[in-house]
Image (cartoon, rainbow, N blue to C red):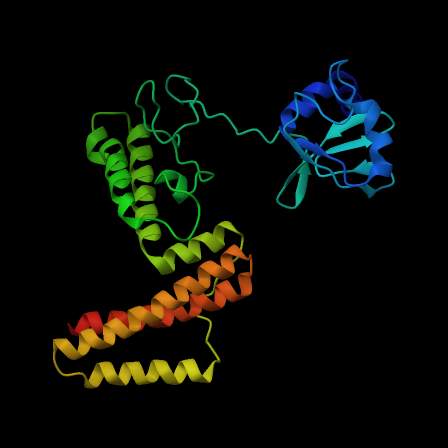
Length: 289
């Protein structure tokens, strides 16, 4: 019954508006299938609509009709399915609206909803907001780390538990959780290795930092570095080795970024494992300096 109600009660124009995409026909022979369904008004072209910005249409024959990227056409009816992870859900792709627990105000969507803009109440942690959003930078590996500190301090001025000591127990708990998450976001994104691991996590790629590397050439190089650190005499010698390690670290950071841009997660993971070795070697030098 609910499916029948959905098919008959939801206007096609509304469904297409939710998709906010531009129609693209992949096969001319399939155009007649779409023509009757896209005749929204007399002023509309058969294959475009003012309601639609971009729709990537791909046809896949099924028992019940034809699937294409978003809407499903069959028997003159339309049912919008949005792919989320590995499942389909009959929901819009529009961003979920957040509402303040204290005053019921709705988030404006311009900043992460950690603090209500209306009543200034600290909000509960929302894990759908990632670290890049919290610190106001684009989600990519090569970021301007120097710009993170200002945003981090701004959040701490609003979220630090000491600043909400007079508030309710509920809000104090929210502030402690949000403050800890902002700290973790700052520490993660300012460290090249942690940032790389976090980005792959967002891509649902789990990295085992403890996995042993079988590359005999790399292992031999790491052993030589450790021996050089142990035998180094004086600060100058240690700083020279440190500079070499930083050069190697930068090489693998660049390698990770290239692999990430090409969505080559295997090479990206291999770069992370090598970065881990060099970071540990660098930490040994710092201990001796």
